[in-house]
Amino acid sequence: MKHILLIGLSILILSFSCSDPETNSPYINTVTGPIPIDSMGLTLIHEHMLVDFIGADSVSTERYKQEEVIAKVLPYLLEVKKYGVKTIFDCTPSYLAKDPVLLRKLSEQSGIQLITNTGFYGAVGGKYLPDFAFTETAEQLSERWIDEYENGIGGTGIKPGFIKTSVNEENPLREIDAKLVKAAGFTHRETGLQIASHTGTWNTAKQEVEILQKMGIDPSAFVWVHAQAEQDFQNYLVAAQLGVWISLDGIGWSLDEYVERLLFAKENGFLDQVLISHDAGWYDPAKPNGGNFVPFTNIFEKLMPALNAKGFDEADWEMLLEENPKRAFVN
Image 1: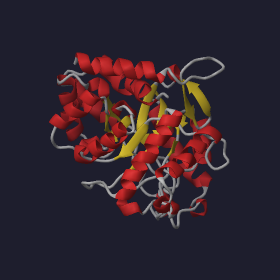
Image 2: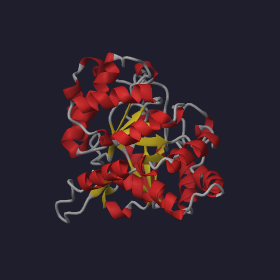
Image 3: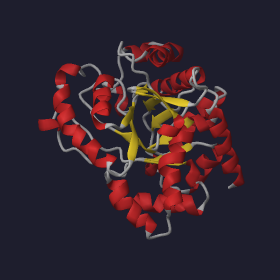
């Protein structure tokens, strides 16, 4: 436990190394501009407003109307705002209908701070990768992502607050997936942005961590997304001891496995390395009226009562939903 606490302290110290030049305060980019770390408040670190699964070769803003997406999504943002949520990370990547301007409109109308990302999504056999992702080097891909951090996404001026990538679960990693991890590493080294990688089991996540370590990047820069897929709980201990962030982020869809994993984290002293969210939403342009939107409320309506009955308290929830997101993502 002492070792893990020291890792957490070191992450907190490192997060202060990048700050607003005018105020010298740590910050994170939102779709409406940078905000101080302390204004993040209660945070959901993995949700979706809009996702289009048609593929990189066909995705287009012509497939939906922003005003229709807003009409569908806004009530769900206002609903979760009642639970005190101040900040939401939108994890929709490029070529899956990431729309920073839409997110800015939703943020302005809801009052919730939304954070978007840079990076590419390699899972599902590369269906959501542009052709150039297969031919460019990791350094070239990272230059694109660094440019979004420095100058904004697609001419919008809206800057990402983290790197979102993904890999296929294979051992060894496919060449394209390893390249995406390296590109994320180069981007992290230049920008300080945290790397959140859609993964699954530790067998795959540890390969990504090893690539980053060979690049001289500390495992604390890595968020193991969809870690709820891991069945061997001892691997959570391994990841936590390395400093990896363990993201249990499908709570919009089920409950029991999260209760079990979070109890294990608390009992074994690494709750301060865990992130939680719903992976919920989203408006799907391929479905009538955007399909069935999954609310962002299961944590508050179902998970909290279940875990409070087993000994969780206010300090645990403050750690999971306020302190950990700040420590994990502020660059």
